[in-house]
Image 1: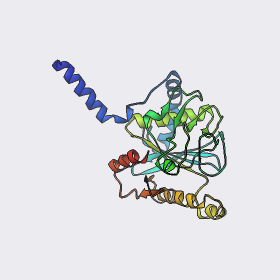
Image 2: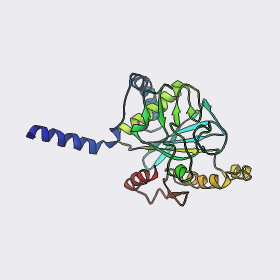
Image 3: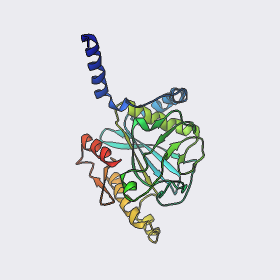
Image 4: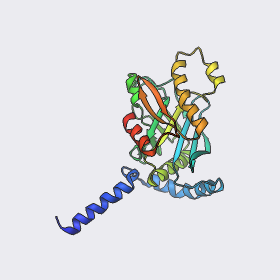
Length: 255
């Protein structure tokens, strides 16, 4: 192998190490057009809030109120950028149990660049990563659970096309700018003590109490906790104790 080829391969490897999040991110005519259209207005809105386009993001979903929150990192914590209305979802409160039950999931998920789908038949989409290791430990099955456009859903979280373009553009920019993955936390409702009390007779109350632990971590610290599974239960690391390396390791062991 010639020196020039070796040097080129070494350079490409170096680039891949510096920008690992860009690996596996595909684009399409639809995604390119959406990003070109929405990025300028997003940049202006972010700037007015003291935030930067391409900063790490975090998503929370609340099924009962049909809300999707998009958070953006601001120095050492996250700031709520927008709350979007979910156009269409299916099922009822409670986790997804099996393929074909038309139920949307609840839990803690990770989305990397390879999970973005610019070729989606539902305009644009990203796979939330269901089933994760918790779902698998409980024997839950299913596939292709998405946040997508087209306002139609069978177990997914469907947005209008203009809204999914904004979410997708923010996600793609964050991943291309170095965020290795972003977290998606899905809850049945806002996990307040009052709401937990309201649903205390549900068959899912123990599961929801476990979800509340992760919800409370973020509410208190402003940073989504790293999440692992032990003995069929979600375990959360305090944000002030974790490092980015530990968070990446948690993601690798979580899915």
